[in-house]
Image 1 (cartoon, rainbow, N blue to C red):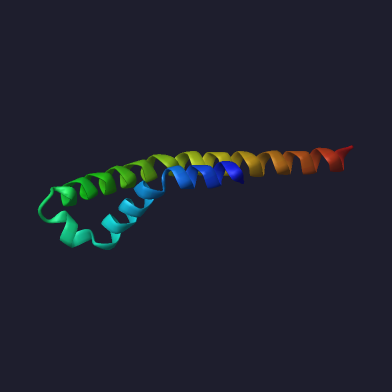
Image 2: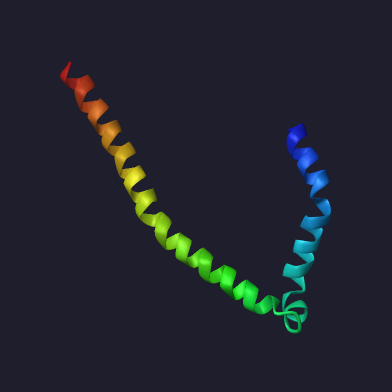
Length: 77
C-alpha cells in the first residue's frame, strides 16, 4: 500500500496534467496537434483490443477444459 501511495505522490503532477487534458480535451487539442495524437492512440487501443480477444477466449476455454477434465477424472476414480 505504501508503494502505491509513494508512486501516486511522485507522479501526482503528471496525473493532474493528464486529467486536465482529458477534461479540457477539445480546447486543448485544437492548436497543439493533440487531437491527432489522441486519434492515433485510440486507433492503437482498438487494434490491441482486437489482438487480445483470441487470447482471452483461448485462456478461458483452457480453464474450462481443465476444470471439466478434473471433474470427470475425480468421478471416474
